[in-house]
Image (cartoon, rainbow, N blue to C red):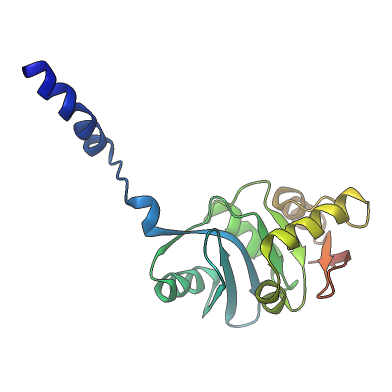
Amino acid sequence: MKKKIFAAVLPLLTALMTGCSAGRIHERSYLRAFAVNGGAEKELTFAFFAEDGTVTATGNDIGSAKENAGLKNGRDIFTGYTELIIVDGKESRSILGEMLREWKVSPSCRVVYCNEGRKLLEENDTEKLLGIAGQAVKQGIAPECDIITVLGELCEYGAAEAAELYPDGTAGRHIIS
């Protein structure tokens, strides 16, 4: 009898001791892509996995903009699975450095340029944008533009080449600094 009770309670005890909770996955929004517009105040537009639409928030820096987006969205934002960052070319080195260091985005996360990143992200499916950027790289239209490559070039040379995505669904090359 004691063995049956122990066997029934063991999974519950293990979950409590490790901090595992079945509900925690639903308490977060998982960031898939975002666009950042620089300047004195940062404006970030977020697109999440398994959620329709985007959330736009502003802040004095990208950290405070992310916090404001979490408030607007009603959930903590998990950034470890981020697949796409759209930059406008302003302060790219510091922004991408913080993304990698503080937000811990995936090293394979693509970095692309668009001067109207918010509009691009609001009007297009993230899967489509990732496909356009991926095809541009495969076809030699744009260089490899994962965050490690782009940030490395920014640190070493002060500029980096990345894919530029256009609203009409095409891509090209752009130098960001």
